[in-house]
Length: 515
Image 1 (cartoon, rainbow, N blue to C red):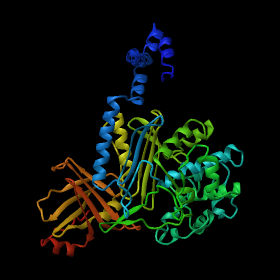
Image 2: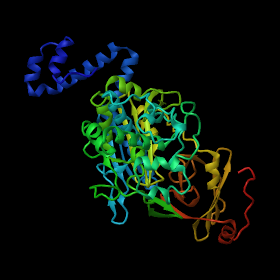
Image 3: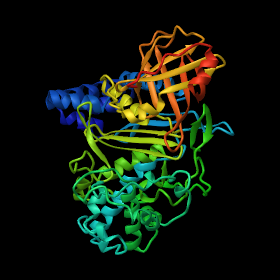
Image 4: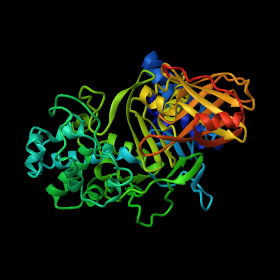
């Protein structure tokens, strides 16, 4: 319960007397502030222990906010100094920023820094906007979520006939992921196509499972939804989304991230290749469509939560449908789960040089947004660590990287004229060891912060932390590594065993047979 703006009325309602004199006397304003603080404390106590604890989490003030800001700044600066984070971050409660900072460069060629107002591509966070657009059509009676998509798009293959709109929204349609097709990043994704022309690339592919019988995350489903919106409304997806969702929500900065458009304050996306920064691979403007076409800002994404959860955009029924877990931890454009014992509605985004996440804790009114303009930004891990700092709990990032991905990184990386980093796998962890100069280096276990960025903590050194980020090609091949340790950054390309032996002039033991 928050006090009304008329503080005197609020205190009178609680039984405090002689307030007219206090309010009229400017010298007594401090007394009024103290009375107000006491009243808020009394309300928390009367509400009961659980409610009081909730109020305390929702309203850190004064020194508590300052302490959180210091800890959040230290966390983000450690990643920025290590070259792992370039972007912007916000932690907001009830729409009010508690922490809002930017790091790194929006444009590396001109050394233009990121700011909290910089525009970033948000990738698959777009999906919750696409879902809202579909729900608006359902509210208008233009369609039903349980209608088969083929009713509106008769050109779809007959095998897709059982596929409903709801299945497309919650990834239970069985559609393969178009972005997983061979050559998508280097060829297919660079050609301008309408949404339905993109979907047609999969017409001859088998479904992963009969519609409605499984769950597999698929960008294809959301591209198909964009095509369905165009068919039903007679408008482009971008126009309908702007008119019915973005504009009513007051999102003035959020827009189609068309790479050919001139967009003020837009960040450039970057990747790493063989130890060097390079611009991200090009992607056709139309390629991501309803699955990931938007760019946005920190403030707009916080405003989106406020507009959506307040009922300004969707009806109560539509919002409940959006955040219902349909059996696989996914709603309609949102991952549905918990973190630190609190409900968490979330979605990440990864696209062409950008990595992002928006975490929403509805019971706390808390929104955390991490937007990065490099492909190695560990957005999810950073967001969960910021939540842990806010809640005063140990961080649990729960990032899991499969052994197949870990195995790709096993090998040797040149990090200096006579030094090499060796990477092996031990179970579900990567092990790093410096070879050559400083060959007395210990073996260090790396914990994943994302599928590309790893950290070793409690290491003997100046700051007790080593961060390792791998450069990869679109097909997943690693080409280089970046290491940050004791305030020093090293980067270098992947090399084979023979070159590593020559660099260090020593013999290497065989990599563990089990990797």
